[in-house]
Length: 440
Image (cartoon, helix red, strand yellow):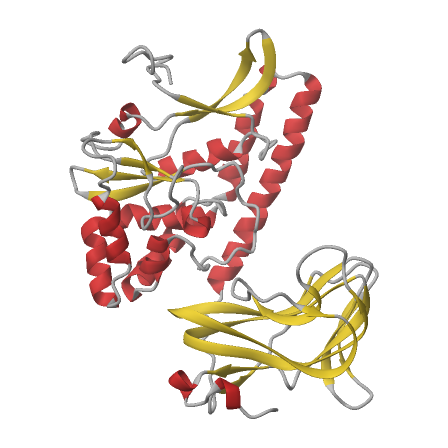
């Protein structure tokens, strides 16, 4: 902060800078590339460069340099710069007290944040949409949310309630979200284009039909016009080339190797998104008398030294089998679209000589639901067929839910009876009480 002790002092026209040693991004390109993508579509995002840092005569090496969130930064995007600017040092969403970086009036007021939180919690979906448009710059937020998902900013607001800033624009009296901390991008190429959101505002918006429709339209538009592989990979090359004159030969080669991986991640992400966008959304799962059978199981993390297959046991049971290697965390998975309600995922499981791993809370064979199961799995040793079950709640109007038949072990085998694997819906939703659903 160059103006902390001398009011108005600047360094190369900047009041504040942020230096990052890029330990999470040895390519040194993610933050700059991500910021440029946001700015390319008119979103407020800091300018990013690089610096060779020396402290008291000690050479610290290459750093990523970002401009700070100051009035000068705000002035490039807003007519007025006297609004409240919030940081995540304290709270991590609009329903929590956040640190105010800039603004006027009492620091603990934060009525602007409270208004957004109240709008996001409006139970009536049509009223919720209207209330959100009253307090939130919807157009910018849709772009913000879309880009975070598109570039796999998994440590940002939409997916993790982290690394963001919020500005209350006094001109429009609406809140605007900014990206931050984009040093790990494109890391999960198969991230769904309509994932389960973590941020309250993102969750709330996607539960409304208008919000979902506008998000889908914005995503397909930006994917077509912005996510152009040749441009992005060439830009990575340009950023890396700009560092060549300032690095030793071996340092530059290391950066080049990491940048090549970034280019590969960009290519894989574009391929996966194109595939996802070409597919129709799944229909809501059909329940008959509160029960739905399950299909579409796929292998995930097939173990080295083991194997996974669909087999028929000597007693004629069709089963999903996992044979453990020395370090196994393997599963059969299927993804379903479910409506709001309470559910139970259940099925018969048999194990033989299952030895737990020396680490982790989940051990042995079990059933779970991704991001929803809290109870630890601990089914080890040998056992004949045993009914396992896990209950979970879907709070959104519609949600894609991943069901998992898992084995975490260093030895042994597990069988999951395919015909017994099913989903039961609670009596309040389907007329069947979970505790009394008939056995298969």
